[in-house]
Length: 168
Image (cartoon, rainbow, N blue to C red; front, side, top):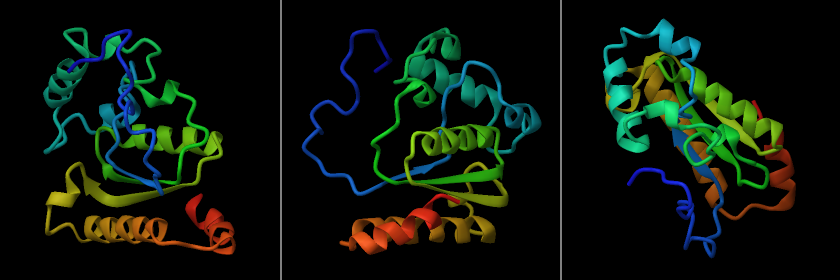
């Protein structure tokens, strides 16, 4: 289903859920202009420009990223992100959408959301599916460890102690 003006947000009907944290892997922000990493890794072996175009058009219609405007449902960078639970991000160094992960992490920090950004050096898009990518596996283990920490009951003192660790 494509984004259409007047449609209910994706969270409709889930207001009653208590969310301890959010884990995002290779988040796409659908920014209208290409970011540096898209130019730098245009020849990525996994995520090709035509893949991105296909995903963009499947989600946003024939105009792709040109349809984003300032719609926060297409590009969370346009949303008010304050009040979100802690966010754990995973990104790859050699990924065309790497810079979008950094943009989201900064937007979350600016909104005073606790965020931990795990960045896999030397890895490409799809590192979770590459058993030979040792750095990618370490990054994924760190993401899982952080998510487990967020899902168990913790004291207010532990929350206060996590804040600096989550904001690196």
